[in-house]
Image (tube, rainbow, N blue to C red):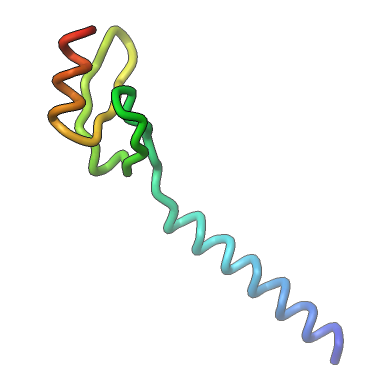
Length: 67
């Protein structure tokens, strides 16, 4: 009985970890204001070989003026 309980608990934890990984969202940091935003929602600009992500057009434009 105890083994069945432990086995079920471990299996449940594995399922929880899998769901968490599938539901995770990549965050990026705006280099101008330091805000973290979801990469899928961010504006972007390339500088050389690197892509930078921004929370707003204001931050994007401020960055582009100095790049």
